[in-house]
Structures are given as C-alpha cells and as structure tokens.
Length: 377
Ligand code: NAD
Image (cartoon, rainbow, N blue to C red; front, side, top):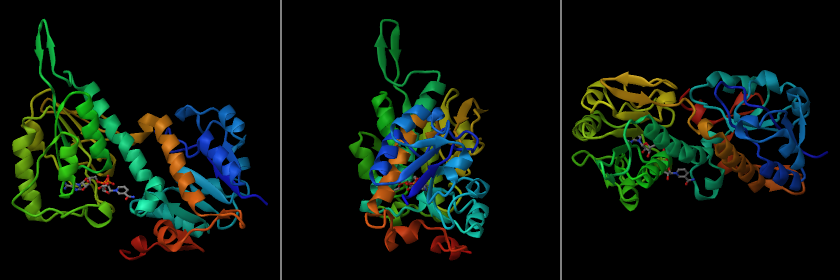
C-alpha cells in the first residue's frame, strides 16, 4: 500500500503556517505517496483546499486525514490526541521545542510515535535545504525590521526635501545569525545606517560584507570562528560585563535596535537592560526577536508594544507566522527536502541514515531516545 502522508491544520494560537504546499503535495505524490490534508489547513497561508486537490491531495476532516497515516507533517507538533488514528509507530516531522516542551516529547514516546524534531537538524552542508530554523529565521529577520520601521515615527532613509533634510535612522542589530544577517540587509535596503554585534568572531566579516559597521568586544575573547555547530554558548561573566559596557555606549545613539540572540537549550541571553533603554532617545524602537524564548530585552512582552522611557519595545511570539504564505512554502519545502533525500524507491518510503536520523529523532519504540534530551536528564 502507498505510504500515507497526513497534514493537519495548525491548532496553536497565532499559528498561521501550514506544513504542506501544493508544490510539495505534488512532489510527494510523484514519489508515490498518498497525501491527505485537513480542510482549511492552508487558508491562513493563502492556500485553498482547491489548490491542494489540484495538486493531487485528499482533503478531509482531521480524523479522516490522520487515519492510517504513516507520516504526519506539522509546523508545530500536534497534540497526540489528534494522532490516535495514525499507524503504530508513525513518524511526525515538525518542530517540537524539545527543551522546553518535555511533556509533549514524553507523550509522543508513550503513544509509540516517532517524533522527528526539525529544530535538531544538524548544521551540515547537506542538511541546509532541510533546515527550518534557517528558512524561518530569515523571514523573521526581515519582518522584524519592517515592523520596527512601521512602529517608528520617523523615516529610515535620509531624504533631502524642499522643506528640509530627514536624517537616516540608525539601526543596531544584536546577534548576527540567519535572522540578524537578513535584518542588516533589510535595514540597509531601507536606507538606514546599520551597525551590528555578535559573540562569534566569524560574523565580523559578514557584517562588513553587507556594508554595516561591526561593534565588537575587543578586550575579552568571544567565540572564535563559527562556534560549535554554528551556535553560540553562554558567555563568561567577564565577557557579559564588557559587552554591557560596549553596548551602553553605542545604544544611546541608536534609533532602532533589533535583537536576535539565541542559545540552543537555554533562555535567550539578556542583552539590553532597563538602564540602557532609558539612555535611548524617546521615539526609538526595539524589536526583540527572542521575546518568545525569554527575551533579549528587559521588559519585552510577546505580541505587545511596551513603552518604557519613551522607547517602544515590540516582538512577536511567532514572527515567521506573520509572513505565513512564504514561511509555509519554505517550511514545506524543508520537509520535502528532508524526506525525499532519504526516499528508498523499493520500500516506497524514506529510510533515515544515522547522522541525520539520530540527530532529529526524539522518540522511538515507546522511549525518549535523543542524546540531547537524555544526557542532561
Ligand atoms: P541562533 O538563532 O542560534 O542565534 C542568533 C545569533 O545570536 C547567533 O549569531 C549567535 O552567535 C548570537 N548570540 C548568541 N548569544 C549572543 C550574545 N550574548 N550577544 C550577541 N550575540 C549573541 O543562530 P542561527 O541564526 O541559527 O545561526 C548561527 C550560525 O549557524 C550562523 O553562522 C549560520 O550561518 C550557521 N548555520 C549553518 C547551517 C548549515 O550549515 N546547515 C544552517 C543554519 C545556520
């Protein structure tokens, strides 16, 4: 029997994305799979049921779609209760937020499902096209700058008009990973004067190549090169102190600050204190992209505009969800690239290798099996 791939409508609050696009539905069908999608699942991402049907997918109720599914695709992993009709040991490929949502991981283990956590995709060249963190962060970095620009009561580019000159906005990007690089590029395109900082020394050249000014702690060593797996770690107290001093001097002159700093498995590092906010000019705007992971900015709240000392602090709990059509198309392609890379033609289904399979697999055979979850308890 053909492999059955099921996709549900996302149920988390504020989640507008969908894990399947008409393009990937067609491609999965071409591999010989039957694709079933819950009715209305794509509407918030501008995909109609008709478009899925035209791409060869079945459209139906959640229960009908899930029945006998071999693989379930999700943006955010669905509650296990919704998966009751799936085949025993069915795979669920989605984001699981595994460090913070251990309960869900345990529930998947108990239900005998195989949870494949897309956040745990290794940062290796061959997995780049499967990496949802990159595809979604890139869009989030863009949206952060647009939202900040929209909130700001002044213009970004310098404008010389008959009535006088409008000064260019000064934008400071803190954390130059995928989101930060896109934030720099977007702010540059809007005509701002851009500076940026990171703890990883490899980002210095990347900042310069985008035409922005690097602002770096020089007297205490940061992370040489890219850092393990491209990720940062928590910095020493000495570094944090030096960074706070450097930022204090710089931030008071900025109009817009975009913070994007994350550390896998840990709360987001605190980069901007209340005292630093107080030093900024009234009317300045801070966008905290890490607000859902605990926040880089003191006092930031998800999905709320907080005004402190005349500075507006904004941040979405789900930034990519504000660009649902593009975010979904890329997310869906990441999932397709992942499963199709491992497609075994004879078996008619994907067979994962150990490097990527063991990295993303959280649960199997009733147990939590991922090293990153079992090692630190
Ligand atoms: P991330 O989302 O984990 O963090 C965002 C940025 O915040 C990082 O650049 C990090 O160094 C920085 N940061 C952390 N603590 C900080 C602090 N205290 N102060 C200032 N900055 C701080 O990172 P990311 O966007 O996922 O990307 C990290 C790296 O991984 C990048 O170099 C990227 O190119 C690389 N990457 C590689 C692949 C691949 O090869 N498959 C895929 C994705 C990303």
